[in-house]
Length: 491
Image (cartoon, rainbow, N blue to C red; front, side, top):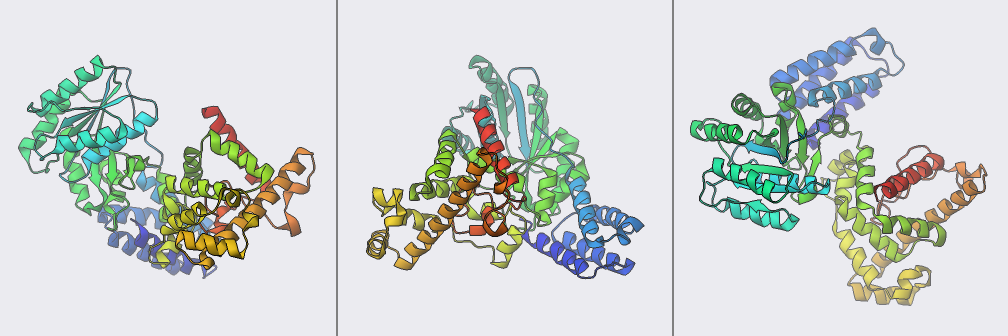
């Protein structure tokens, strides 16, 4: 979504880094570039004006101008101000003691409320709650059918109240939740225009009738600068508590979404980064700011890795350290990468990854997973467990069975070989650490090792990007153990 903005800002920072000591003219020129980048990304002009003024004032201090690394200080200030503009800290859903809690969704027509309601229900279900969806959109054809279908896919019931008034449907859903011990009701209201007085009044009536614990406005990230007028009108009429930004993975400039918090004072609670039920994510202002500035979101990658992991995978990791890396392990890692959002999703969260993707045209061949899976499935059971026995004749047979070239089989075998070597080095480190030795701090010839436990990064052909760059094997091993302990505690 913010690819163009990210590129523009990073080009500005690159020019600053190339100057060494900065002058007032350098800062003024950089602020002009930042202003244009934000405006072209559709950020509200009042927000841009205030942002640039505050940033420039902080950058012009002697503490920055006379420092040894002024350019880095400017980047840090831009990061701080961008984080502040987005809301500073995560804003979580607030649940009351009453049962059920009621969450009401409002928004414009086509903003994605129905899918957002389902994604929210899926997220709450994963957190151990028991949600019920209320189909209060009686105007859009088949709206209730759509909600029922999507709800059925995630195992969440839908209260329809066919033929009833939206206010009565909402009330009925609450009674249904009480009768069937559902602790959260998510009210999916009809889309409405802010100039449609009758529809706006209906939203007010539903809110009065069910007294929701949270009113969330669903905003399409591709709305543009008009998003400010939209949220302002809804804030006056329904006084919502927070915002869900949908379609943040779209191709539009999306800067309007950056303006919401600053203009309305309402926090962004969730963002939707795709179409699948699990694509709704809590919004972290600091992480989003870092991603926009090309700094990546390594914490997010670790969280996704933890979420994708299970007890069997942890046991498999321990076995790999003992016995080596098999083709079955590679297949499991590729499946784990798919669960984490694919190569493009992971690369976008790595420092500099989004910029690299942009330079490649934003395209990455996700089909490598299917191709490599076909290659592995064309191997015999023995070949998958002992890939070292695969010779030229076997490679030709495997290539023919998978419908690929022998070169592509060789490429996969090379990836396996690199991963197996890494596991060998990790095994050596683990043995040294267990023996109380200090030789595990560096690998052979003093080379720092990288953490291999982000599932599938090497299996998908990214090689060296499997490392977090966190400072050598000791810290990486510590992180590996911490992740393993956290997963076991969850179990």
